[in-house]
Amino acid sequence: MEIGIRHEEDDMMSELYDASMNGCTTTLDRLIHNDPLLLNRIPLTPFSETPLHISVLAGHLDFSRTLLLKKPQLAVELDSHGRCPLHLASAEGHIEIVQTLLQANNNACLIRDQDDRIPLHYAVMRGRVDVVRELIIAQPDSTRVVPDGGESILHVCVKYNQLEVLKLLVESMSDEGDFLNSKDSEGGNTILHLAVMLKQIKTVKYLLSVSKVKERANTSNEMGFTAIEALDHCPKDLKNVIIQNILMDAGVKREKNQINLPRPSVVVDHHEPAKPIRSSKKWWTKWLEYLSYRGDWLEEMRGTLMLVATVITTITFQPIVNPIGGVWQTDQNFSFERHGQMHKFECRAGTSVFACNKDHSVYFTFLICNTASFTASWCVIFLMISGFPLRTKVCMGVLTLLMCTTLIFLAFAYIIAFVMLLPYKNIWYDNTVLDMEFIISGCVQISLVAVICMVILIHTIRFLAWLVAKTRKFILYMQRR
Image 1 (tube, rainbow, N blue to C red):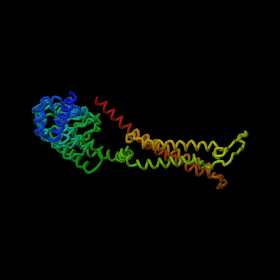
Image 2: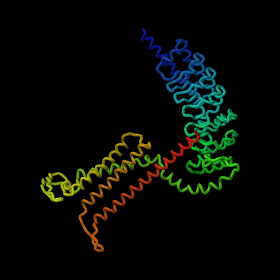
Image 3: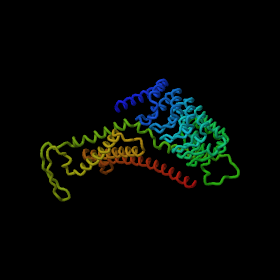
Image 4: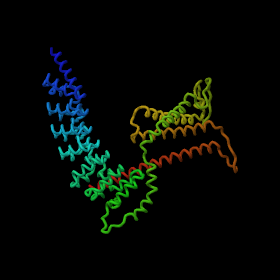
């Protein structure tokens, strides 16, 4: 009997959710008439959303109104992501449903989801101007809510390039200069900094037309950059020139070199002294940008890197199964004298010929270099197919180190094999005996060392540039404190 009642309740609840998806108020009225406590059992269901979440998301106004009339508490119920129905209606821009929800409970404006966002944030991100207006009227304090990320609602507008919403918010708080010029927690950037770095020309023009923003246009971020100095560190294109002219016309200055110096009483035109400074640093800046880390390097070279590592692994595997000089076909015993001592060797069939040679130490050195190259290239292949997040700087550094190790030991293995296989020949020049082996192998070694030194120099410069930037940022941070 109890099982039958439970199945009947489950069927009615499933029918309720189907009705919320279709917006059928007739079915809703019938279900509530048959079971007046149906809506009270919604929290006991395994569904992550309430029927109001579903009807709001689908835009069913009448169905949503009926649900709220029967049970207003549904307006503040949360789904598995911590979102109330007002979050969904604000994101979708259903203005009439938003108004209905606000009439039921306007405190829903301040509910934060698991991402620490309130309904106003979603309306701003999607550019729902009418919804933003209604939310501000219902709860004016909602504009001051700042998520854990440290972005004000104004920063969200600029980040998602919602100029019309930004205008509405700025007009509603035009007298609050501190909030209009507030900084985010990531880099201490104002909304003007952010608009400049994102190269939003219309947004920059509008912000500089606001008196409270223009008055503090020379505000510096945590790096000590004003808006125009932040633009100097962005990739160069036509928008840079346009935005730079807009900022200069508005009186935004470069204050970077005046952090520790008192302001002069007479303002000097900064264009003339700035030219030699910029021209003297132009080549250095371009060189550092050229040597800087490229985040898309792995995506561009992934296939090539995999192919090269596979080829090197195959090459270094071959000398193991097919040794240089071949193998002994039959068992051999021989001896030789070195440093006044006799050395005996027993060479069995199938073993390497060079391993039993009097210069066997050179052959063992070749095996060590060959094995090191094989191991490093195998590690590269394994990392490429293992699913690790290779785009991080740590993994990029490991891949670079492994490939450099592979190539260095492969080159050394080549030189040693060259010395072992080249017959001893002398050439005469000005009564001087020159070893041909020494000349050729010496040229190869010099070339190898030169390339290795160049790579080490480039990585050293990258590290020093990174270290200087971090040190300078720390010094500026300590000066502000």
